[in-house]
Image 1 (cartoon, rainbow, N blue to C red):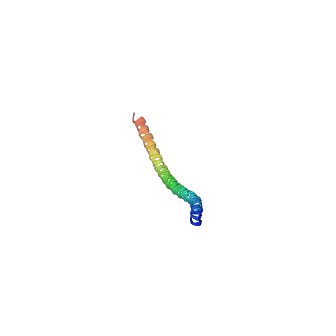
Image 2: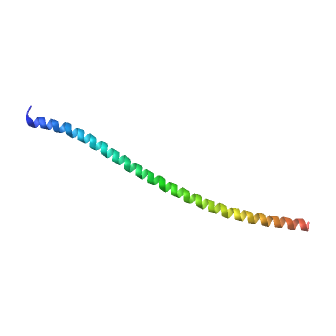
Image 3: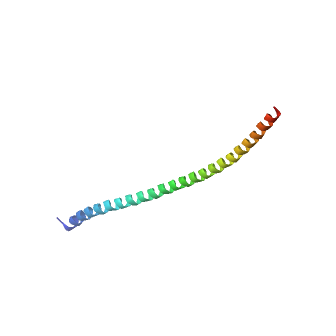
Length: 85
């Protein structure tokens, strides 16, 4: 076997091995980047959910105050109707 063919064969084998490790490395890096992006997307969704929950709680408190006011008024109207009738 001549030296150029020998070195070409050895080079192809080593190149294949290095290529496999390089592809595996880049695949791991791509998975890590995808996971980071996914985590950030979940974080944004969670922040929006918390904001919506706070907004809903505020609206519920406002409705509770309004309902209490309506109950007070209704009690006054009922009392007035009982007094009249």
